[in-house]
Length: 413
Image 1 (spheres, rainbow, N blue to C red):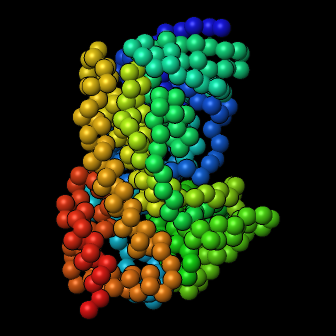
Image 2: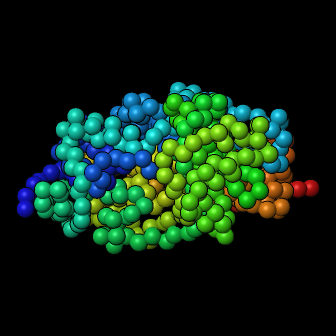
Image 3: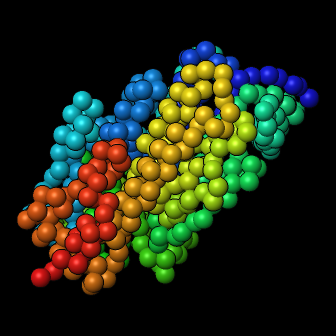
């Protein structure tokens, strides 16, 4: 068994964890980055970064990794809906919300992870792939053990960052539990052959019992998402599931009944999962351990802000660690306070988006029609469009008031 010493161990080489490793190593700390996979593989994870998340990547010094991995700028956002004829749908210019940044980015998640790990290593971090059976003993000098391909290893560190995402493998070991809620079901599929789809345009819409999303990637590829009622959770399981998934984009609300999508071919596995949100039942900082990203709690994925949150976590925690030698839990109090505020707003925002676009049936359709009419008459009602494009603290406060939600959803007369 080998025994090593380091300043920081980062458990999980997803985008948030790897970005933190890059920043900490570049700042002069010794860093070990542990990843359970042998190689990064294509999985349906966060592949969309909001403009405010791009700002966080800039501050961390990792934005170039997204470009190298083939990130595409999404300049236009179109919301198609059975309540609106396709010819009347308007495109939103997403570059205007943070002009210095531009529109959000769409990219292959696993490629970004690969490039980030390479940058971390180039900055001096030790990147360990195939790190299995990771255990954490928190304390003033936390101890991390793991099983490598060459045998067991032990690392004594000054700090451990838990960044294992939804698995919460570090959080569970320090006693953090989550209160979770299920918000219907979702599926995701990477496809190719979408050359007729505008490369800079993302889409969202609702028809019948599905909410769909389209996020183009490079070379005619795209990640397709569907949200649907829990009662239909098996609709894409079994043989032919990916083909049925694509076929369900033949929708009246899409131009040419969605032909630009239905001609696509599966280019990866189909993932089906319950859409969950989670809130930690206790602080996500312990002696010698800090949780970041989804490991510290997450919102319903319908909002699409998970990666932006993970990068802000990575940036704020890195700033504390690079500011001095005092790494006691108390010094992370401002980070926890900001994250609590941020997540409260994002949970609220996700509930608005889900009620607007991921609810089905006649009542939901009429609700969308009423909201569309209200937004056309009152500019303030369009604040819902900001909820995942700008940072939570920059959205006007009234957008999070009970009065606003009541006005938005009950307006009909």
